[in-house]
Amino acid sequence: MVKLAAPVLSLEASGKLGGALVFSKWKGRPYARTLVTPSNPKSGGQVGMRAMFKFLAQEWAGISAPNQATWEDRADQLVVSTFNAYMSRGQFRWRDFTAPAQHDPPAEADTPATVGAFSVAAGVRSITCTQAITTAADGWGIAFFRSPTGTFATSYDNLIGVKPISGTDDVVFVDSPHDPGTYYYDTREFTEDGQLSAETGEENDTVV
Image (cartoon, rainbow, N blue to C red; front, side, top):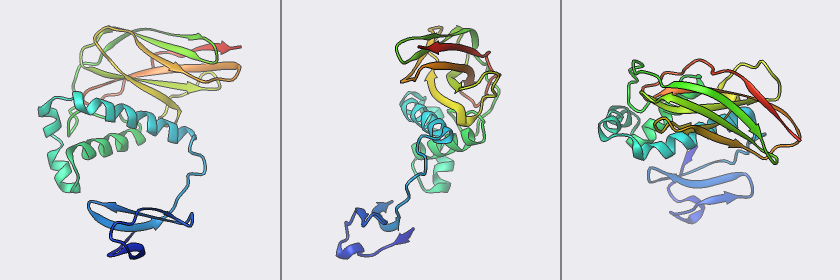
């Protein structure tokens, strides 16, 4: 990244140039960088990280003020907002296949949710995954994983969706669109303080 005083003869230049450079601003400072296009924006890793990013971004507003305040020290160190510190750390932990947490540092001492049966049901070009919740306790979310083959190990790069736990309501994720074939799924619960549970148990169904 190159910092600029007056990019392209303008203090407010932004956007792409010639499909090679990008001009923008970061923390109020203009910069230029090489335009990078992912070779496969739908790779397992990309999909998995985007799924967790979406969950974390949507959940921030519902996190208690005291828990949000725990991110202030990390935010000051990084010179970013508390929201950005929380998002950055959550994504970093997920890339290491460790659950994100609502507060910093994660205590990893909460009581996990008790999950019930996990089921999948094929529909029109889709499969609906349903994770029953017996006791919510300190559970925060359910991570849904998918594989084209059976007896698979869950990982950050076969994550396809993350949904919050809300009491003992079933946690439902609809996976679509699908070509005809058999698809294999599993789930893992994680707590508000960064604990990732064991796999619930693999289920599959066939889209025709």
